[in-house]
Length: 366
Image 1 (tube, rainbow, N blue to C red):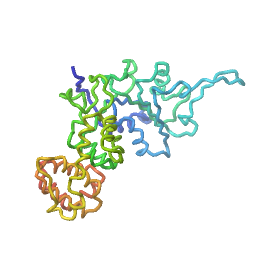
Image 2 (cartoon, helix red, strand yellow; image 1 turned 90 degrees about the horizontal axis):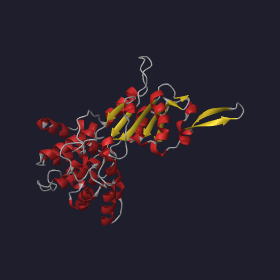
Image 3 (tube, rainbow, N blue to C red; image 1 turned 180 degrees about the vertical axis):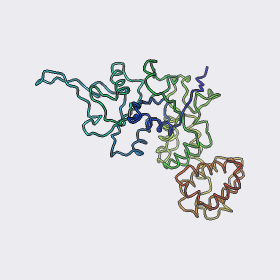
Image 4 (cartoon, rainbow, N blue to C red; image 1 turned 60 degrees about the vertical axis):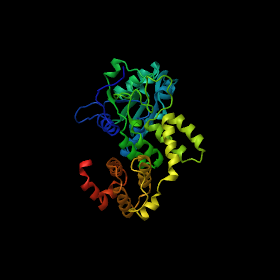
């Protein structure tokens, strides 16, 4: 049976808000801090949340501390050391936690459910009491943890008595439109984003119905699976695509990152790159620029994501929108509009008369 579930889930952005809301507690409302345990399948962006919080909250008041749970030993966290003068034992906290500077802490315990049993009491005290050994974290600190779903079958086990003490959040994979907007803003190669738009099953989850035959994604029922497409592995394909490696070497490297099926699909876009109408030619004459075959979505998808990379003025956006108005596929026009409005160019798009006109004329498609 598939591990399909209807358990409530949150998006990555929603998970961040829960962490920021529950993590530090609320002294005025007499609410103690709550540790959030964020769970999802591999490669969907859990670990990146710490960096997101750093950018959003700033480092003036906070230290942001990453703890690789399974790969830490007791002496990496804290230790009890003899004080020969007082003939007593004193507790010393590792410099990792920067306890001496008075800043609030935002601590992420990564792969929390793979922590060795010997260390679990130390982490449990950190989760529940905001203490490392005998030292309390500064008031207003946040602790959260990440791990894979227990159903992923990668060694993550959650005892019931521990589960009942934290807030367990199940995080979904990003939708393909969410990831495409993010990837476009990050400068990920248009070849990768176009390929993902062509094959949106890359962003499905094994927990969804009818995904047992999905050749792209992680599935714990596939014995020996080591390479698969995930938001993380797709990102890692970017330097390979942009490299000067021979195509057969690119194919092998992408297969090693994101699986053979995605690698072969992506290399089809690499082969296509030199055959589509160039962006500059579209801008020169949007009404007459060569339009790909209406039945072949791949070239148009590639042209869309190349345009998102190059549009930097209202004039260029006007002209590319004029070109897109000629596209016969309403689905491709909608993809262009949605990704554009979710990208860093959204403000430009909202002020653009050609984009506004398309949105008004095609409101029923949205």
